[in-house]
Length: 77
Image (cartoon, rainbow, N blue to C red; front, side, top):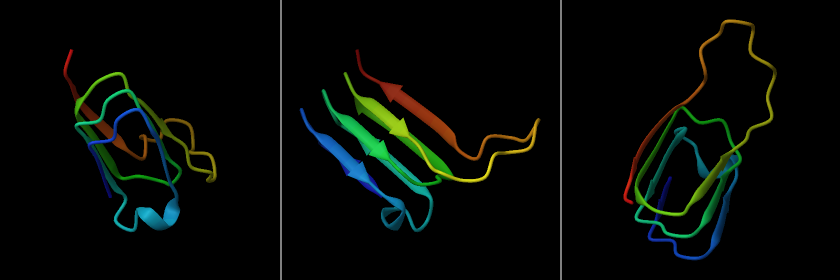
């Protein structure tokens, strides 16, 4: 799923929007993105003044387990 070029808006994406568990957010400014699904990988690049909320309802992880997603961010200031 790609979220690209969003400006001064809110984007909400649910579980059906992430069949492959991937999220890319690029070139967004002054926005909020809600990713309401388990993700394998997320990338944020070229964004400013954005809030990304990642939340998925699922069973708790056992103590010491690795996180279920990696987040890579490259922000412009």
